Image (cartoon, one colour):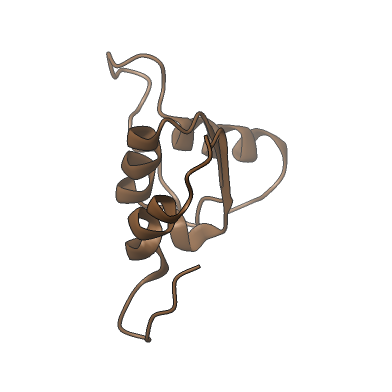
Amino acid sequence: MEVTNNAVHDAQTVTDILAQETAYLTDFYSDGAYDTRGVYDALANRGVIGYHILPRTNAKIWYHGNNTASPRHPRDENIRVIQQTSRTK
């Protein structure tokens, strides 16, 4: 838990929140406030493998299909699944 004022965005607290937890984390669940590159980077650095972050409704793919990076970014995979199954933009 991290208590902040209105000047601090939720995503800015992820590193501090992760540092409070000593257990091995496999998954991270959150809303669209945490849909930032910094959060994904912090989770990857911590070894989290399950990203359950709801992309914002106006989310765009970060790395398109012609990207040579593999595997695809987990956020982009979330967006693709949402586009194919349920939520409209």
